[in-house]
Length: 259
Image 1 (cartoon, rainbow, N blue to C red):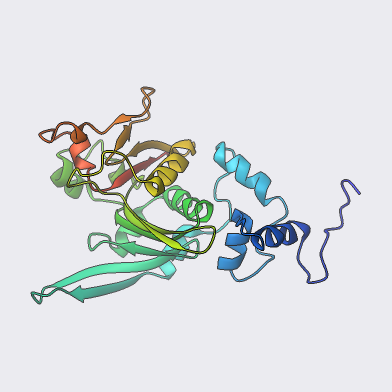
Image 2 (image 1 turned 180 degrees about the vertical axis):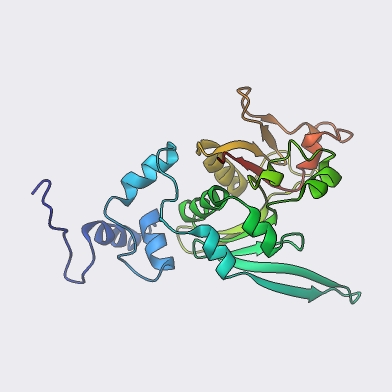
C-alpha cells in the first residue's frame, strides 16, 4: 500500500530496500547500499530513504550521507606508524579510518592537523569513500600552518590548507563490482600518461559534482571553480611550467567550502 507507515521487512528481517540490494548483488550488481551495508557490518545500516538522501547530497542540499561524525572517527582511530628503508632510514606515517575505509596519511600530517581541519572537509572525504566503494584513501596534506603553506607555495594567506579547507589525495584503492581491488594513483610526475586513468577520473568527477567542493586540481586537469571550467594541466605540454599546474603533478587537491 502506498504511504503505508509500516516498514516492510522480509523473513530475514531486512527492509525492502536492503532485500532489493541483496538481490541485485546476487547477480553481480553491487549497489552503493549493498556495499555500505556489508562494510558496516550487515544489512539494516541505512534508512529506507538513503537513495533520496544521496541524491540530495549530490545537489548540495544534504551533506554527510551516513550521518557519521567522520572527523571524530579519524581522531579516534589515529595511529602513528613507521617503516625503515633499505638504507636504514626511518620514515613515519599515520593511519586511521574514515567511513569504515582505511585512511593512510603522510608523515607531514599530525593529530593536531586533523583537529584543525574543518568537519566539512572530512564529510566530503567520508562521502567520497562511501559513494565510490573506496576501501583505502591516501592523503598527504590536510591543515597546514601559515609558515608551512608559505614554504610550500610562497603564500599562506590564500592557501585553503591554512583554513582547514584543503586536502591533498595521492592514491587509494577501489573495490569493483566483482570484488576486485584496483589501485589508483594521483600522480604523473614522469609525464608518461597523457590521459587520466579511469579510477582517477571517477573520483575527480564525483568531487567536481559535489557542491561543497570549489576546486579540483589534478596532474591531468585543473578546475579552479572560477567559472572558467576545467582545463588541461599545462605541465603536461610544458615541462618548464612551474606554476600551480606543476605543483599538482603528484596529487589531487580539493578545496572545500567551509563556514
